[in-house]
Length: 176
Image 1 (cartoon, rainbow, N blue to C red):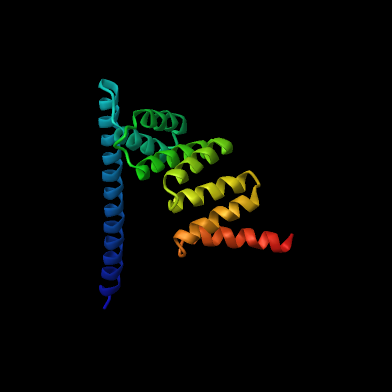
Image 2: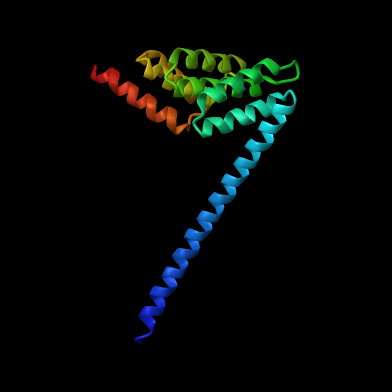
């Protein structure tokens, strides 16, 4: 009986250390994968003219790393490379990424312009509607923000972001 308690503690400690080790290993592998992608894309784009996909992919990685100026440059290059064969959904993703980079730099007018362009290309793009609503909120354009969230809910009634933000904006109208 005296050995049971230390064995349980040791087992629990070993289990926790195994979980932490696994989480660290996964994070290291994910970071390594991202860094490999950055190296590959930078090498490709430095040596030759890139594809719209390569510019978008590297721009998105830079967004994740909060390198907004670099991501804006890459998204703009992607838009310059666009050809007849690029579908509107992919172009909408690029405009959304460009809008997000401007939004992160508090350039809300540019963000709104890019989000609207994304929505012209893909009117059912729920993330674009949410992002546009958020930019309108930052500009204190409550009516337009609410309309954007309502539009998102029209295409995805279960969208939690749009539900939460639209309810919050409606409460402001009621209390005002």
